[in-house]
Structure formats: structure tokens, C-alpha cells
Image 1 (cartoon, rainbow, N blue to C red):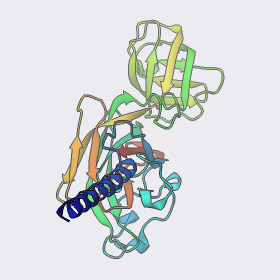
Image 2: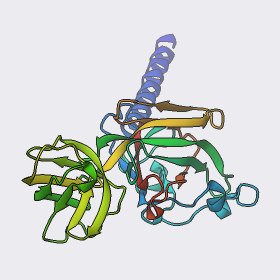
Image 3: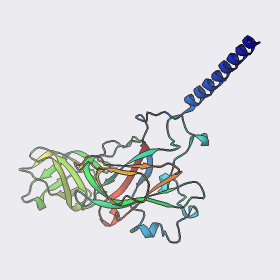
Image 4: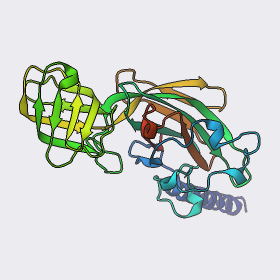
Length: 304
């Protein structure tokens, strides 16, 4: 009898262990991978000028702090980004979602006035449809000079408005008289104050500011040069990555980290988004339309 019961107990234990191992294997297959090195960048905020002159213009936290007042626009129209969960049934395994954990964000913008242009921002988040608006982080960004050669979503950013070769350069004397001339109206969208990257014979390569625009074919750029040429390359208003993020407060959210390069390279913000379904970057104090600081700010993010 003892042997019979002993065999029964052993068999039962083996079956139980098998069930446990099977459940563990199923959960392991479905589990979110620990390695997020290959996480793709997502467009968090479409390229656009500021959302308002001040934060209060966009959100009045006294009267607009609940989910019902969240911007319902899509990301492509300036709205919030939804961090979809696996339970939504629309996310691929290991990509495009985060049921918890950190996301990393990078910002870029166009430089309209001078090197080191700035703009202000807030990061807001919501949990589900009954969530209050969480003011996660606020501060300002400084544009570096690492050009956004290719956006993470594939669009060419360097020379987006102008990328011209064989531009004629007239070194008429002082920097205020230096003309760059084209014959195809390539300078039609150029605005005084934009940054131009200029190279060419007799010209010291670098970023310079557009000082005068006389028409679609003629602009002045205060370059350092020694003589005329007909082989200049002029790339105007490329986008640059933010290299410095100045944070006003770091106590608004449990886990926030800012990593600055300070060397004209890419700065990043890391936020623990556990419990959040929506993230929105609100941009203000950056109005390129009136030649005020930066313009066309874009935000990207990925699982971290």
C-alpha cells in the first residue's frame, strides 16, 4: 500500500511540475523581452511650431486638468501620443508598446535666429480615461549643431528648404555685402535669421546667419571669405538635435532623468511611464513665424 501511494504521490508531483513548467513557458513566450536595444523610434510630436505663446494658452490647469480636456488630436495634428498596451491587441511583441517601464525622448528643431536658440516645453501624461492630467516635467531646450541628417522616420532634414550647389558668391567687401546668387528661385522660402551651412572655394566652411534677402535668387550671408567663387554649397535651415535641456523641477514625477551632452550632440529625457497611457509634449515660447527663437519642433521617443 505504501508503495502504491508513494507512486501515486510521485506521479502527482511530476504532473504538477509539468503543469507549472508549461505555464511558465507560455508566459515566457508571451513576456515582454528584457532587451530593448532594438526598440524603434516613434513620432511623439509631429514637426510644428509652438502650441501657444505660453503654457496657460494650451492648458489651464485650474479648469482643464482632467481627461475630458485632453487634446484629442492625433500626433500628426499636434495631439498626444498613445502608449498602446499588448492587451489592446494591436501591438507587436516586443515593439511599439510598454505596459510599464521607461521611455526615452529626443527633440529636434530648426534654428531661426542664432546658434543656441531655445524654446520651452512641458511633458504631460494621463492614465486611462478617468485619469487626471499629470505635469511630469517642465523646462527649456537649447538647440545644438548636430544636424538631423535623416529623421528617424526617414525624411531628409538637412537642407530641407534649400540645398543648393554651384551657388555664385560675390565677395563685395565686408560681410554685410556678401551676396549668394542662384537662378532657380531656390531662396524663395528663406527667412532672415535662418542658419545656413556654407562651403566653397575661398569660404571658411561653417554655420552662418542669413542677414538680408532681396529676392528669391539673392541673399546675404555674413560668411568669412577671401574672394569670389561660383562653387559654393548653401544648405539653409537644417534641423538640429537639442543638446541641452534645462529642467525647472524634477519632483513632479517619481522617475525622471535628463542627460545633456553640452557638446552640440543629442540630449535625452528618460521618463518612467508606468501607469500612463498618453504622453504629450507641449511646446511654447518658440514661434518661428515671428522670428522668435526656434521653430518646427519635433519629438521622438522609444522604449528604454
